Length: 156
Image (tube, rainbow, N blue to C red; front, side, top):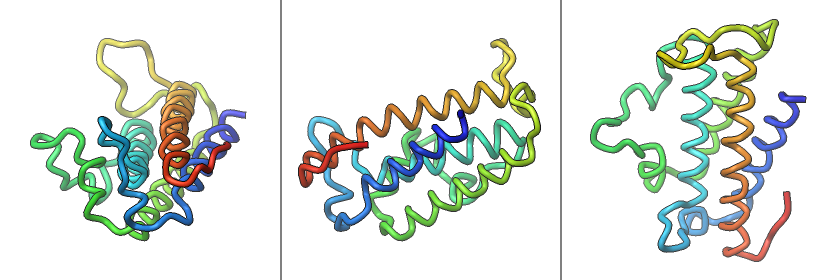
């Protein structure tokens, strides 16, 4: 069930930006600076961070390994403005595929993560899945509002 909900929200986010022009995926709704292309790049980072780095213990993938996080903690959101939709969708799809590969190699939801939070409760694979569903669900709501503002499309 957890895998199904996560995959559902991954698909919702992807669909919210499909069929839009380059200008439309960059459109914001002031006073927020949030846009769909930044959101999708952010979620690609979140996939790599939680599944690749925290769960599996891998070093961050490119471009996250070279990102100037110290200068801009929201680099994933802000840098997307200079990327093409194709690049960001490909980055997202690659991150999701890598996450699914990692997920398939873990045989219990109680598996401990490689890089837990220090001083906090034990973090498990289950915790990461629930957190990712929450992350996607929150951003799916944002994406729905952004898309509705662009062309009136709602749903999902």
